Image (tube, rainbow over all chains, first blue to last red; front, side, top):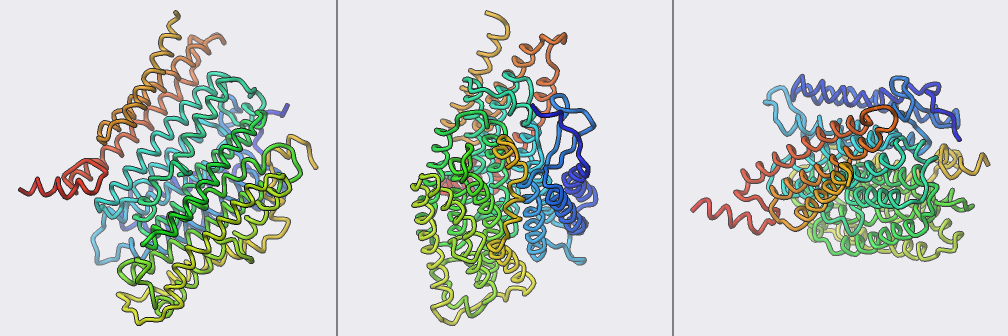
Amino acid sequence: MTLPLQTTAGGVLLVPAILLPVAGMILSLALGGRSAERVTLCVAPFGLAFAIGIAALVWRTGAPIAYVVGGIEPPLGIALEADGVSAAMLVVAALVVPASLLFARANFETRESETESRAALTFWIMLLGIWAALNLLFLGRDLFNLYVAVELLTFAAAPLVCVSGKPETLAAALRYLLFALIGSAFYLLGAALFYGTYGTLDIGLLAERVRPVPPVWLAAALMTAGLLAKTALFPLHLWLPPAHANAPAGASAILSGLVVKGSFFLVVRLWFNVLPALPTGAASMFLATLGSGAILFGSVLALRQERLKLLVAYSTIAQIGYLFLIFPLASGAHPWTADGWTGGFMQVMAHAFAKASMFLAAGLIAEALGHDRIADLAGAGRAMPMTIFALGLAGLSLMGLPPSGGFGAKWLLLRASIASGEWVWALVIVAGGLLAAGYLYRILSRAVFEEEPIALKSRPRRSRETIALALAIIAVVLGFAPQNFFDFLQIGRPAVSAGGPT
Amino acid sequence: MSVSSIAGIAGAMLVGLGLYGFIVSPQLLRKVLAFSVLGSGVFLLFGVVARRGAGAGFHADPVPQALVITGIVVAFAASAIAVALILRLYAETGGVTLDPDAWSKDRGQSQE
């Protein structure tokens, strides 16, 4: 039995992390297009500062920090909580969002001489909306609060897909929105069942009360199915490639790197934080099987794409698959679960940086060449070496070659799967790495090894290339993360706290 | 049969109907309507939950009612975004379908 949740020292930091982007949204809307960009740029450094502050506090105290909203404790009130993984994800979001934001300035800035455009206003406001929703998702401790967060995330993400207003982008946004809406309806239905059974939606209180009874299984199944549709896990991935490939590059980076992780994070919260009392073997097996399907299917489809942005989008489907291996490899009270947990979240972070970098690089290539046909990339490596280098470096992490964050993640997952005796997952991880090498080789062999004179429509700005490269470098540097960092990700991990301090 | 049971069964039926319509109908506006029906079913179930939890001296548990109000606002916003996108799609292509092959045909007809 745990004590009632209290606001911890520094817990008040969690509030501005969520409210700052919301305040930016409202201010942008009030001030209009020209100011929206400036407001967003002003919010970014403070958002990063708060995220780092929270992470530093969790790191130093070695325990989750919590804030009880309005001083009213759950079950009546709601609480916010930052454990190791949510603090880490806050920092990841606070790095990827501003990077995409600086990158997108070239497309959505409003110069003094220009009239304000609706596309620019929408872009800046929705970007802040996504950031606010993600922060709330990472910190929320109440299933209904999280529902609002995941809906805000969808409402902000879908319009970003169709900022350009072209018919195919509108269709992609609509398909995305419809998948997401039905997913959230399922999630809400599950929440109703939880409340009807236990009279609370607070994650901590539910974890104490949950027993393996039919309504709980039904609620868990409904919520998981709804969230999988939002995460685009195979076979519910149909909406992802058109949506992510048609969005402007700055938005694609966030959609692929962060937004799909938001609903994944919620699946993790559900199974590890709400339902640790359930015997989840079969469900874990099922989720990991879908994940394996995603790795193989997504990679094979990525191999067959003609367009660079679509290839990168299909690669996202494959990389999402790895995340779901966390369910069999990190559940229960086994010695290998720490590796499974850390590996899963290393994959979340490494993929966030690598994929954001890749989409930005792909956007630069598409702008410079006027197309993104892989067959016609020959010579691009000479014409824009820094962009192609960023693409290759990010690819290193996706393939899982050392030294990179992707290697660290896959190595930990491999170790966990071998230690647990479930070597099937190890085979899938290795096969996925080989397939990733295959589709990246298709791009790089064209762009680097075939030297043909190539006509650039415009040379990419050095600053934008630097942003893509910086994200790729972060993805690689994650591979050098020290043991302290892995311990940090374990802070507040449910299985550990259930077994007592180790 | 108690009122709660009847409302619960009605809610479950609405959810089933909505889901069926959402999956079966290819028309976008009907999908949005089906989503609204599904949502109404979920809200009705919240109402049942509120009524069942009325034991603690309240006439009915207020928390699910508060959740439903928020849920309705969110569902309203969702429908509004979906309809706005559909209208824009119609303005751009002259059709309301996600199938690109049908657009040019629709557009061709409207130009004739």
